[in-house]
Structures are given as C-alpha cells and as structure tokens.
Image (cartoon, rainbow, N blue to C red; front, side, top):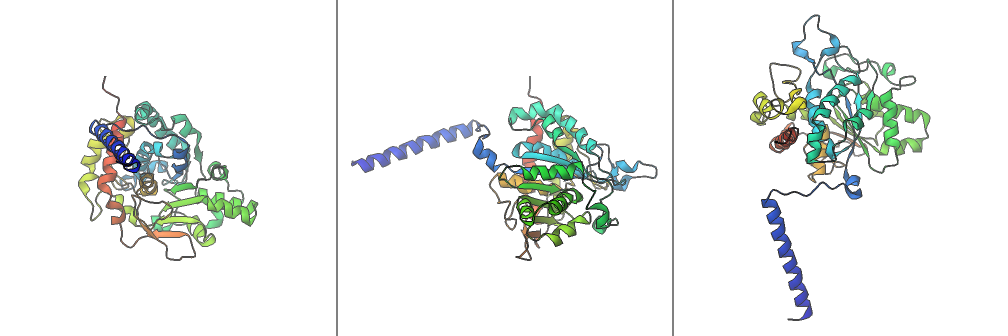
Length: 380
C-alpha cells in the first residue's frame, strides 16, 4: 500500500470510529452542552418584545361585563405568547420587554410584565438545569420598559385610530422608546429584532426621534440595524413607518398569523385545543404554566390563540437552521412572506395563507411541550 492509500485508510478509519461514538451518544440520549462561545453569541438574535400586555387576571374581551375594570379587559393571547417566549429566552439575547398601550383602558403597564417575570423566577432554576443560557429574572426585569398610554387602536382591531400627531412626535418620548434607541446604538453588529404584538408606537417614536436629532446618514445607519415583525396594523404609526422609510426592514402579518389558532382550517386542532394545553402546559407544570390562559379574546373557543407568537418563531426556526430570517420569502415557523415592491424592504403575508404557519404545528407544539416539562422540578 502506498503512502497516499495508507493516509486515506487512516482517515476513513477515524471517521468510522467517530460515527460509532456519535451513534452511541445518540442511543444513550446524550446531547452536547449548549455552545456559549463567541461564535454562538454572534448567531443569537437580539430581540425586543413590544406587547400590549394585560394583567395576569385578564378578562377576555367577549367575557367582559358592565362594571368590569377596563384595564383588565383585553385579549389574553399576549399572556399565552409570553409564556412560550420566556421558555425560548435561552435562544436569544433578550434586550427589551416593552409594555405598550392596550386593554379597554388603552394603558401601558410594565407592572403586568413584571408580574409574569415573578412566575418565571419560580421556575428559573429548573429551566437553567437544562440550559444555563436562560436569562436571570433580574436581567429580564432590568430591560422591562414602560410605553405611553392612549396610542392603541385602528379599524383593523375594531377601534378608532388615534391621529398620528397625537401619539407620535415632539414631547412624546417614553422610557421604552428611549431604551430602544440605546439598544440599537450599542456597538454590536447584529441587527435588533423588534417583535411588535400590539401597536408600533414605541419603536416608531424611537425612529422619529433619531430622524429629528441626527443626520440622514446616521438615520440610515440606525434603520439598517432594525428588523420589525409586526402582528397586524394596530395603531396609526404603522402606516407612517411603511410610507416614510422604504429601506426599513418590516414584516407585517395581517392574516397568516392566524395559523397559530387551534381551530384554524387545515390545521390539527388536537395539538392545540383546551385538552392539549391543560395536559401539556396548564396542569402540573408549575406557576408559569398554570397562568397560561385557557383562551384568547373569546372564551367560547378555548385553546391556543397565540397570534403574536409567529413574530419570534420566525427566529426560533432560524436558530435551528431551518430558515434565514433576513429572507422572509423562505418558509419558517413564523410564516412565509412576499415583497410586492422590490424598491421597498417591506414584506407581507404570502398568498398561500395561514398554512404557512400552521404547517409546522406538530414540530412547534412538540418543542413547546418539551420546554414546558423543563419547568418541573427534578425527581428527588
């Protein structure tokens, strides 16, 4: 055997031995520890969640009665989505949790977010046993910010839109809008993904202030680091963002997000109905699982109604290598989108419809249920 043949034989032998070791590890259920090095950090999405988050004892819209406190009447879907998001917080650098205006009272209350973080704190030690990258409760509390009252509403969500000049512009900065500017300004080359579950006022005010106080070149640098994924046009700042900033990366889902709803046509309801969420989330999985609401805005249809969740599932599947989040025309857990005008970096629902989200239900729900199990204390 010549030297080249000997070298090839050694290489093939080493690869065969490695394959055996990998098979043995898989058979034993072994898994490598999470990669927490610099290369892994560079791949972790930077995420800000902007949510019209209600109180944990939220009264669903269709169940509200005369005399109920308006600040408690809202859609519980944000609570459902936040439970799921917190269980995926190990996959992201969570750089902001924004309380935007919402509820019948049209108020922003960051205390509502802090309340669910208190429940996260009760399961945190169990979660970090599975992945030390879960952020501490105090870290998440430190990046929870207050938005402004009174800005939510459009005809798309069944209310009257507030005039743009009443909710955006000079003298309308908030703790949240200023914090978003600080996040984007950090010397980190990664883009900042802002997942907007309610109105877009807080991120829009950040953009407005940068445009008003910086040069055009500085504004473009700022915009180039922003990635917005909006669930429905929920206040009058969304059209302003789309009309004013053609280069701004925006995904706007106005219908296809409905693929998350348990009873959506073409999906498997048994993987998201009340029986499923009771067995896999609400019962026997600690206080964070127990707070997961039974329904969305109409309690007659109990089950998963997480309309906001595709905004971050778009990134979850990207972390897994399924899709490139910068190319929304490719399928992923958060849906698939089209860019009607090539001169604008704005993406809208693919005509294929809600199945662009619901097609992933089996994988999405299985992964969610696995993480919910992590909240349980280990056996003695």
